[in-house]
Image (cartoon, rainbow over all chains, first blue to last red; front, side, top):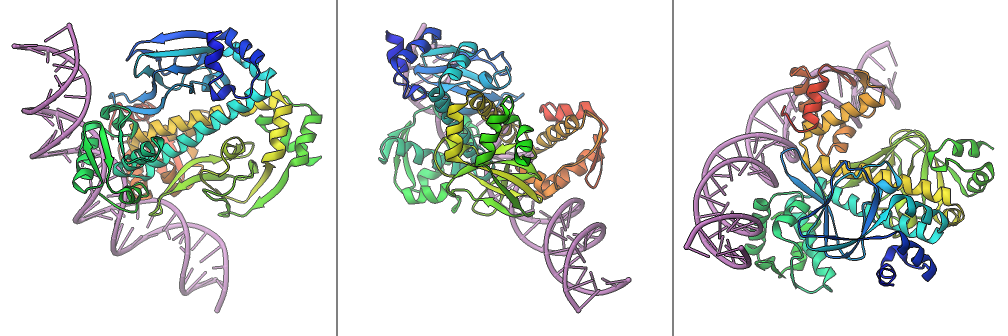
Length: 227
Length: 227
DNA sequence: CGCTGCGTTGAGCTTCTTCAACGATCGTGG
DNA sequence: CCACGATCGTTGAAGAAGCTCAACGCAGCG
């Protein structure tokens, strides 16, 4: 079964037997979203959670005057919107497809039963939520304790790591989205990119980034330096 | 047994039998901390988690230049530092006793076994982590999308609710701690308190707060108004 | 060809922080 | 019991960081 094959590649289902995967597959709905399509809104009734199969999803909050803060960007294999499954009933944020997406949807009710019956699944879910908490606490730290250049430096180093610690790579999201993720606006981000370039920390050409001075970036990320 | 009595009042252990509580009680260490005492530091090896029995604990991050961001304040009945139990091995923040505290400590190893054996406990823990995630996402929203007056207004309304939606109450933490929780500094907080007073939104006398214009505060909290 | 969305740049302004000084309160030791 | 220091909160003046608003270039695409 094709669904089971996808499930077997998801960390959340690590260590489960084929039988158990089949039970899970039975409650899945397979869904498609177009680029830019809204998956759910802040405050909607939370009837289940999702796993990304292909494409990417952004989860974000919006202020009354329209400013956006991206909380998280999820790619293939990642679950999201688990919170309302276990606590409360509303989605606490909005979710939107960044690109054409295929998602698996797991209805709350069926899934909770599976967790009860399956300690490994419960442990995997606990690990997943814990990781999420850690990422959130890093985001809080960044927003509150670092200035924008420091946040950008951290992000670039993170991207470099993700690509095998090489010094040349591409931004994985549009700059305007990156601004929203870093808790700032495109204008400010653009100025900081320019400044990082003129200080020879990086070379930048559209979405292409080359790290010229890794140590300099690290100092920025740690808040030991100013731009 | 005295420990069991305390455990039975903790949400995390709701729905567990006396026997199960006894099993849990067996792995607990009973600990005392003085006001201001450090419980663990960011990066320490995370060997287990805690539940507050009496007193209060703040969990916080510190920037290189010493600014503090309080992530959370925990009172009696609340578990904290669960993350390293399920994911990774280090505490991702610092914890300090705000007052004289009694804490129960649960070593990671023993507790994970209990969770495996006990689906209700697993569900309770999932609910607890989910709630934490929701609180964090609110904090992120506040830090990124609201200005300080809006954050303070939200906090005052939250305190009022906690006290049964009455209009007069006391701040539950020192103003300098509140500043750190709201992602700002005491000077800024003080100015905003003064301004809220002169605009007749609140009356303030030391730690005593009286809400004079609830609607005005709500508008501030929603970002629909400026001070 | 013109439109639309994205990114960039400049000027001005708001918000918040920094630095410094000072008053009040409280607990401690003389 | 008073004096002292420490901590906390408040206030003022100056400065920095980031945001708003506006204009413009550029690429992709109908």
